[in-house]
Image (cartoon, rainbow, N blue to C red; front, side, top):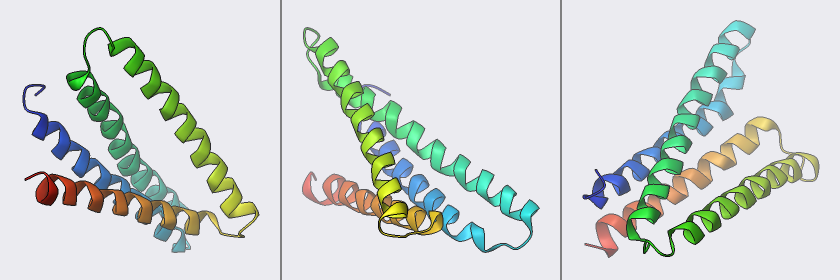
Length: 133
């Protein structure tokens, strides 16, 4: 509901939780020795993580559009897309550096992604329910 920004913000909180659960699941689902079960868990946790990141993308864009002046909306959306693309490239680069230079496995990188998502979740919860109240 665009008139109730708190519903958009709560959706973002839930989405960060989904992202953290999905990334953590990816970091631990590789312990399976059965390839079929491993494939199932990787697909399941990838779906959970993707659902969270998709909702974050949509809801955060809606929040930006809600609070942007109509005359600035095009500029705001273009900056949003540019920063999102930059963040995606930076994330891919960091994942590669963690694997290549720091020697982390894909599972360990997923664990750190879960930690970042959980940290962001904590920041959002503190802001929404402690600072802004």
